[in-house]
Image 1 (cartoon, one colour):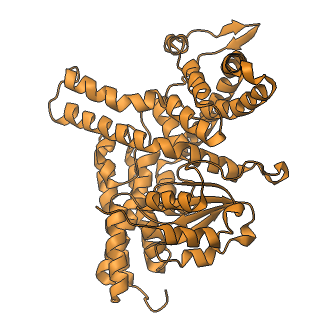
Image 2: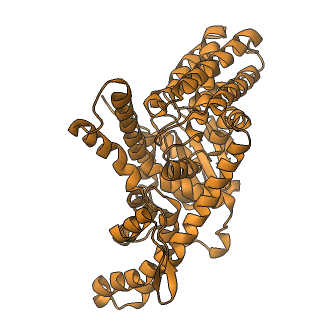
Image 3: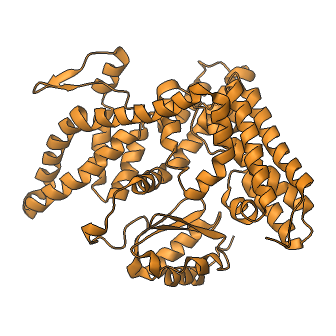
Length: 454
């Protein structure tokens, strides 16, 4: 297959974004080119959204998210060449500290940027865990067989050693030494720590300060915070050590400082924050699983539009690490299937050939879990499609919440992730998917489309 050339599109995006000097960071997710900019006033976002090859745009604080689609990785590579920057890196490092604002949007953007590179590994491993469950539960495969043991190893490795993956992506994001970041992930998963957690041992003591044994395997926030602080410590030490001595003394001093700091302070504090976040969501879920399911399923696409869906992955991963399953992912899937039903109905109901084509293509994309084309091509274009998707997702989410649908691993929220949902209550997830798509489809078919008032 011949690779398409997106050089011209990249040039247009760069020019309309205010040029290279206006961009502080560039990276991409599954469907979006994400550009952090200095001055939003210099960005002609509306014009970018009208470019051929661009589906739309979305602002998240000072981050411009250009909706490209499934070929975003090709656009990103050409954009990097046009802008003359190294992939996955900052273009401008020496920003005025007064312009660096710390807030909730910064946290969400950081979590998304750090987790994006590791999502493929988690999704692949999650599907393998689902296949293992199907084979041992329904196909008569012996759980103790070598075949299933190997499957289990392949499915569990990315989750158990998740701190290593996150350390790598965090080091790239915070622009610090990758080897040091991975070493500190090794500190969190060192046999002394994992054995202490498994045995429920009391905290060790170092200089009179406690070193507890939290469950670090499968965690994300502890290593993200650790690498963030590492980026400052490493830079400071590297600045003051003579160049001739750096290769030995910089890593030595960094480890001597960061290891006790991580074990005594950063790690336990981060685990406390993680526990609070997961506990808050589980508390709300415990109050009313039905209402939680309806809200999550119905609001799924609005969350995706804000770009916060990747940030909330920490909740799902926290649930899996703590309880061995998650309830958030199957509810999210209901919103995705509702969009599929609405797009499918637009394909059938629309009279304009253009809308029929959009309906067909977005239905296929939504079915396999790529929602942005459907959001910007159908969801925001037709009021009845938006209403139908919200209602369909809410009804499906309520069903999943009522009967306790679960996911055994982290996966993308789509029908292709079905193997991971195959727990004792899998039937309710299957019914929820069917109902979500059917309700959204029926509502669009019944309410119709006002194609002259797009």
